[in-house]
Length: 125
Length: 106
Image 1 (cartoon, rainbow over the protein chains, first blue to last red):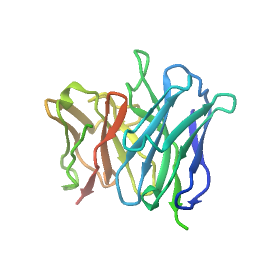
Image 2: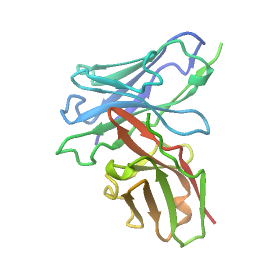
Image 3: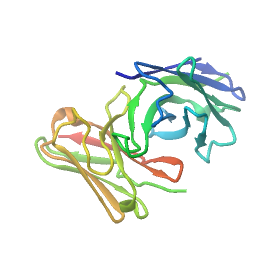
Image 4: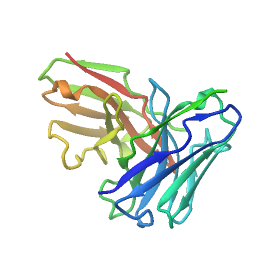
């Protein structure tokens, strides 16, 4: 079955760029009906959607983060990546990658059906 | 922007029925999804497209969506159902989560 695994530095300095990668195993990231999202959760708080990318490279971002976010996909390596620039302590959170799907053949509608375990990123000097 | 409103907490006696609401403008016209998150774990999809259960999710989890409110119902709540629950919709091309509800089974 498809699994997602986040990876990247656990500590980032303020004003620098947070970079994370989500590796997809057990399936192809290029499957047409899927999109790939980043979602974060500060400790003790709720979920915040960051953005998504399709295998084609098309992206959508949360308007509140759009000026600082970039999501890219590498189909040859079966992974997608997140970059968040100019980070502050407010960006400290567990970051999840997740799979969604859409269209008539999407089994779960446009829900996030598969999630990674998440990776904690702390912004601190 | 679009906001989803959930109660911070809901308590239910063991074996009784818990209802968790998710309010939003004309939410009845949107597909609502529900996720369960236990401490230290990633969220798990428990309801998709308003009222559908993925395989492996117990039948005691059900949901509805109409008007301004979507509702997740847990019938015969068990101790293992204690968790945070989140509703989620798409507002155009933006994913939106509710603030989450902590379910306590007494």
